[in-house]
Image 1 (cartoon, one colour):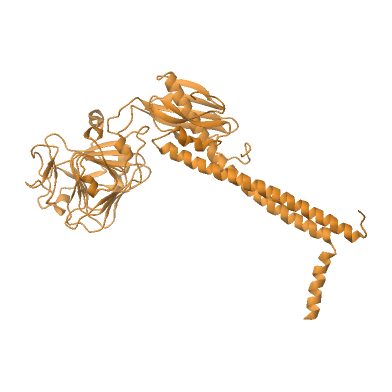
Image 2: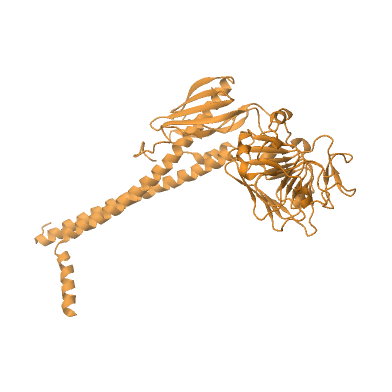
Length: 97
Length: 398
């Protein structure tokens, strides 16, 4: 492709610059929205955890909603002599915490 | 006018002649917008992360403490690894545990909890509990319980508790009963001295008041400041002529108790004294002071109208008398039932703004059941974490 004038070349470069900027900005905004969605989910999980901590009925079903909250650690229900309580264990480790 | 329009077009025309400059400006605006979006998202993620790490530390502490006590109930010091969190447990003097969680890359989080002899009665986790089915008609959200489900006062704790008549937080008032009851009362009458309510906190969580407690008539509610939970065992009746407001983090549980040689009754004629038509509660024959003991009156003759708010929890050994619309903020426990003393009718609504985690919290003065256990872990200020805020992300926010 041959450019007839310097002005045309400038316009093409400007268009490419703007398109690249817009694509980068869209990508970053998309990532920010994704990060926000994760933050909102974790906030809701923290709220759920706080409600569970106050609740007398701690069940394995109730802690499923906390999956992924602590990254490498899972929240589980453990059985102590005084009753069930919330506990954490390293992801992938079976058995009691 | 046309000259100015031509000048304006000329200005915009120069932009048309410099597309790279326009593109650079556009790129900068887009970059600024994107950076603002990313910066905001990172800030929100960091805020959530700051809230998440202490919760991980708390759960790890809970896990480590339970594991330590399961392995050795009498362990004095132990260190366990809970995933990537190192948890150190230390039994402190005075029947408490100090637990420190070290989260890699985040610092140290310290917690403390009481060692409890057992669980509290489940009624302290509910809005309202009563033995008499009739109570549910007057008191909303009432759950019927068996007599053996009622909380029992612990005589050993009561024997060691400070007496209210020796504390400046209470003042004997021989005339207060005559404001409401023509015949007055036989037992001593006390009122709160709100200016000295600091003594309530210093009492160690349990006070026994040998007489009746009055919240006398007045325009404004009686206000108390409590830093710590307090159980006030009133060996007599509790009379509310106006609202009682409890400020501060402490929770107040008022117990109206009937001693041996005293009677409780449903005061159907609302005269404040035993009369033949009144219904006895828990005794076969009337004995003791004429006004009885162990009952609570919400609303009294001679006091102004309006509803009565009570920020305390109430445990009523005898009968609850509802003379005005009333709300109770804490758990309500009725060993018998409730009687309306207002001919126009009245009802009590338990607000249940607070209760107890009966498995992990102590209600002072009452017998517990079940195995010994640690109480709720409370965060203690830690110089490594609470005193300093992170200036940068300590780890990727995901």
